[in-house]
Amino acid sequence: MRGTLFLVVGPSGAGKDSLIRGARRRLAGNENFHFPRRLITRPPDGTEDHIPVSPEIFAARQADGGFALVWHAHGMSYGIPAEITEILAAGRSVVVNVSRTVIDEAHRRFSPVRVLLISAPTEVLAERLTVRGRENSADIQERVARASVLSVCGDSVTVVRNDDSLDDAIGRFVAAL
Image (tube, rainbow, N blue to C red; front, side, top):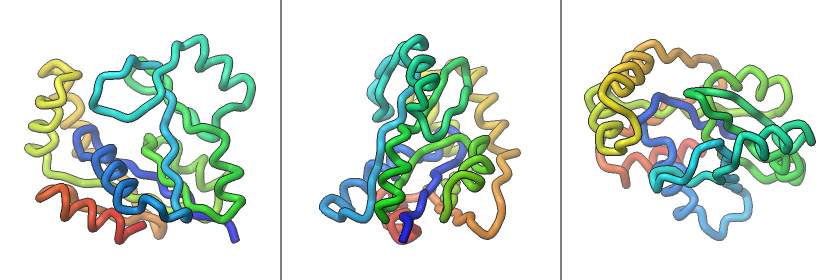
């Protein structure tokens, strides 16, 4: 039986990476779940667990078929390693932080797919983005505005609230997995 591909989506500041880190810790030793790191054409900044690569290395890896899913946003390229295909085929579930723009492609290429939509109120998003310190205030306002139009729906979607304690939100996230 194939493993499930869990696509973690939500607006910037919703806490996707924090929930994934917490789930990875809680599920440590559980061989049924795999949490691959994304490759991003952005230097490490301490707020996100990713593999930083240059645009040239990213393009070469993409040309060689090294990614299962790819998207471009905010002037950067993001990729999920192709190795997830083998992991899913072996019956293990894979949990990845992705853009909602790849949901349809993931549904076409992988099965089963579940979408975990991480939600938080706009004031919480704005506060988290400010603390993160990667964007200026205009960029933060733009990201928060985009959050209000975030629309992900369907039978495969589960909403996970991340608006109170991180520990409680991790519990809800792990339960959804």
